[in-house]
Length: 169
Image (tube, rainbow, N blue to C red):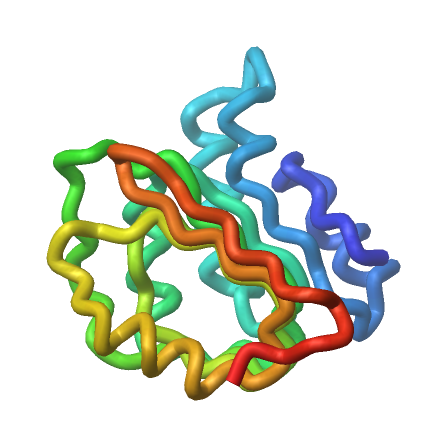
């Protein structure tokens, strides 16, 4: 019961069958389904708003309407978050408080979102120009289990993957 349907009319049955299992909310998949009516996309967005607390995996691209859901959110089941493909000129509005996701292990961001995730193992971050090095140092300080760090800018990227037996401190 981990996969949440992109078909809103089936959501009740899927949620019932899923029981208490974490959900996968994949907005990227929704945007690639041909023939999905605009009202279906809107209904799925509404379902994401209602079920975000049960999310184990959240994936979305260029859907800034979902960004406010992450502002100060407490997502205890979230293990994977991908926020990708934001246009260069887009600025994230309304993210003031850190996302709290204690079970988060993989975080892929094309836009910076403040977060608290002490169990994070993998971070891929497209560094915005305005992000200071002190923020990156603070991320490293607060993610002692981090094993893989990929920092990229629009001008290039750097992959830092320490020996799996070591930890970033």
